[in-house]
Image (cartoon, rainbow, N blue to C red; front, side, top):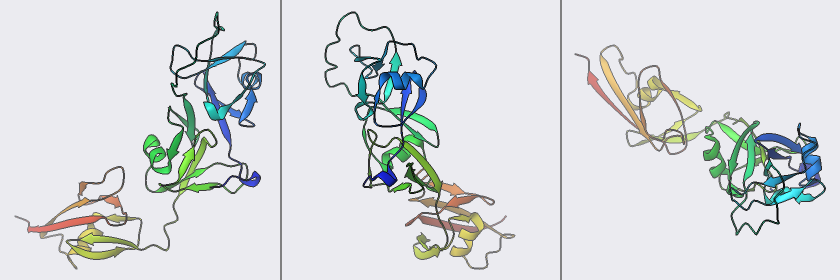
Length: 235
């Protein structure tokens, strides 16, 4: 995920929990204020969730890589002492929905958990060009450099997903399978009129790795997912 001019990541800041689009990662406080309805404020505090949050005057320049969440307030009566390594807050958005974190260094997996993203979508860094950058689960993401993210549907066709049904290897060729399709993988030509089938699974999608299915249900299929299907006669 090397950044070049053609793939320069978009950046944002947050002022009083309002999102502000920033033209660059280093900006003047006045520029940030001008993007809000608070242009006459004397300055901003960078939010460290500390009683010693640093205050910046309107004519100062700051780096958003050191924290991107701010709030307004009167300047301190005297210079604030150091914040004693209390981490600054960072704002990050996915599809324009903001979340806040004190952890600058993230991964694709940690961001997916933060936003509760479904496995059906890919996560990308939103750039200044059409060349948005796909983020894999193991990829590092520095919120000081890239904090505007988007999602898109995964390409599911063509598809071969290896699963296990009743301890036997099977191949799913769709992103989702129905209850009846899973039963048919376990018992060819099942008689749903005379038999009752119980379907459970484990090692499933991130949001619900274990569950049971009923007739009419469908489930997202992931690599290595395991199903157990049993049958009994209807009384």
